[in-house]
Image (cartoon, rainbow, N blue to C red; front, side, top):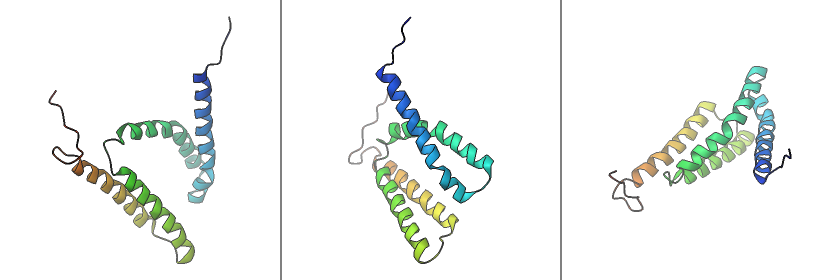
Length: 129
């Protein structure tokens, strides 16, 4: 019996290797937050298990949330600005940072939902079926 390696198998190996690289890459970030080995291990395990599934869930829904790209860009700009602020002025309270991040993402989702209601420009008509 012959066993063949298909392109699908190669794609699976590459995707799993990318997951592993991202998990290993996140270890220094986790150690910057905590020294507890349990949290470090479990967060990496959950990152490996959930990252791909979360990506596909977001990719399936991103067409519905037209302004999510802008909200994510603003989050990245905020994080970059926060890095400079921490180096030049002082630390930003984590509660403020988390609240602003959630507010930006929620604002992008809410704005997308409001702008794509029935009758709004660019809205897709809803079927009655």
